[in-house]
Image 1 (cartoon, one colour):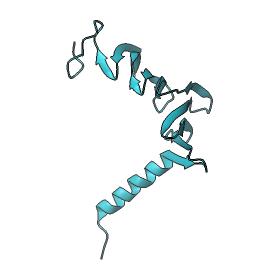
Image 2: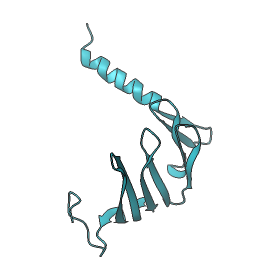
Image 3: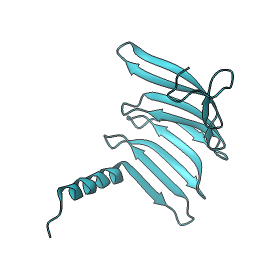
Image 4: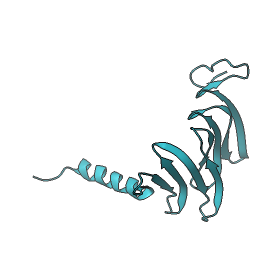
Length: 138
């Protein structure tokens, strides 16, 4: 029975994912997840204990440490880097939910443009505390 073409696409996609994200466990059940840049360089390493994120370390493509966060009860700061190692977002969390003022940075021909977003218990809110309408308007 011949294999269909879409089978190879699914297998190739799964193989790419395995190369980019590596999960390992030690004998005590602690888990480490590593995310990589397309070049293969380490981008983010997370340490989990009993299904709770305990530490995150973000790396630049050069291998230098960009930022480290120690998490306690889901409280810490999450960072997002693009494939060139540029910061694209910084989001504070409390209890596992976005909470506080987050920064989003977009890069274009006019340089970096930062926007600020306020979150309360994982929901984006206006400056007066009202929930923003769907689509981010307001």
